[in-house]
Length: 121
Image 1 (spheres, helix red, strand yellow):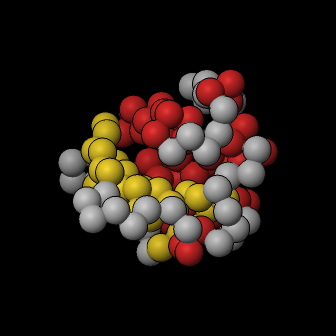
Image 2: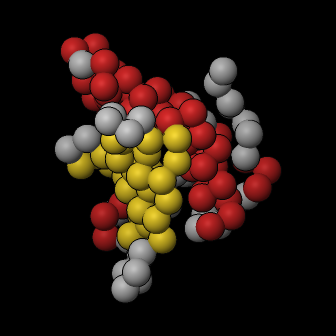
């Protein structure tokens, strides 16, 4: 799915329901990031953001990011076929850095030189 559509989808959800604002913020951050310019692909599943290094996001290893509005935290799950997938729960304010670390250190899909670029306040 093209990043402008992902960004618009979550922005529209956030307009009607404040609980989606953190997802809209993350989608906007990713859509305008150096990672997307380097080839990061995305998809959505209900209210989750899915990231992968290929346009066939669901057919390859991918990172599923969901937001828990009650806990005000993000759950990140790396779906790579492992019996026990890698998972992290991060606070709302830490999600951008956590995604960057995942993309550059855990999955190693992208160079460390992309970390911290395009950081929004």
